[in-house]
Image 1 (spheres, helix red, strand yellow):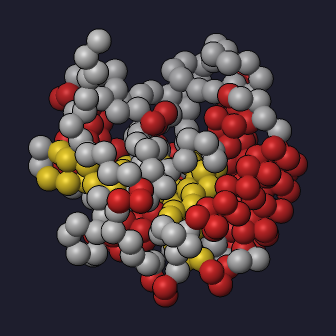
Image 2: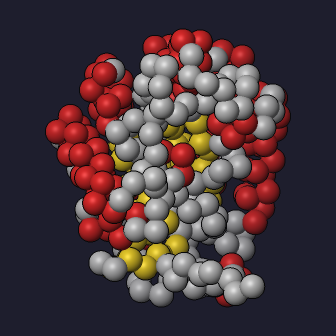
Length: 295
């Protein structure tokens, strides 16, 4: 069998890369990435709290809607208490349907990352023209509501077609989060130039962990702590990005939020050693480094 290849980036193993530091001489960046999503009632895509590949019902719609009605507000308050910025991967339609969420994001000064129109659909199951139209519509809606054009993109369900990177670059995006191949940012080739991949974990992510692998909140807490402790150790050799990936309809339930509170307390006990930032902060910093530093 001949392996298919993507041609988007070269193989550059971690020890072979130039080293650098984050602002303030820090070696480990901390980013909280939160996914705020909206779903179609009894139709389209959407995860279930108990059964994989369950049909769409009133129950799992309501379970997901809990995140926008309740869980997101618990999470906003926790982030305020801890003094943490956040990057919010937002479906454009959630900003229209839940305007108070947008108000709170803007009041906090957080960033919004393009995340499609809704999580009831994917973007990799359509023609290139249709995918371009989806990206353009989502981008325009966010810009109209937020007052800024998003510079980063995260596809619903990590979905990308063979043309997505090209379409994102052509739409003016500087970075994306869909390729979980690294703990450092790296450049990918597109037909219109380079686009940056910022680390976004499919492992340290409450949705695959608790909704799909059915792990407990205590297990997720332990995962955050162990991932952080090991990355803090490894960052003595390499500048790394530690991301915690959240969905308010999962992590926003109080017993899970309590576990997150404990885990973030452990992380922030080392706050002086961290660059606490957003994914755009990481992307902007890397874009300003001399050519050849970021692989």
